[in-house]
Length: 192
Image (cartoon, rainbow, N blue to C red; front, side):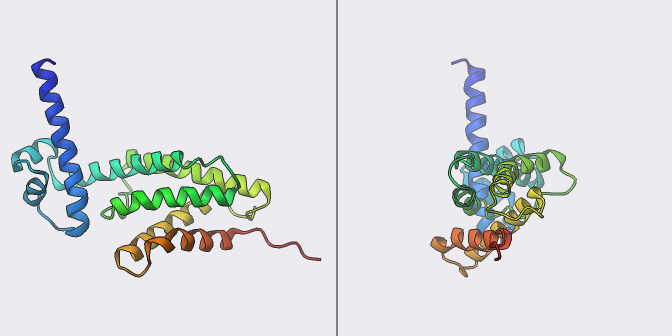
């Protein structure tokens, strides 16, 4: 490997270590300093600032990683397999695993067009599951699929906060989200 390649690999490892340490540290101590992040990552403060000019840049990198991981998790949950409800359960379980790692992430800044686009990529498979459920008659068809996926995202965020606060047990989280969501968009039982 060339010296440049070695330096690039070291820089990449440092950046990964900084992000990983910041994810854990900032979830526990949201106001932790960049110096504390450096210590947790096992690098110098100057190294942190070389990769991230400010705390805002570091938090944005974490948001970016969270969205990538969430997108990968949803796609990996096989959203096209099984019934819409089964697909929804798998997608929610996958997202909850990611959400647990990224407790720091609460909201994407409105003016960050790139991160908002990434969030759309996470939501697209969920919107597709809802649309499939509407076409199959499992879910109400009078609600926009995208609105339903946004509501699902809000439920996931709410249960993540409840998990952090100890109000919900991990084993109950997916069931709470899916049952609340599905009961809210279930197609009405036929009358007569």
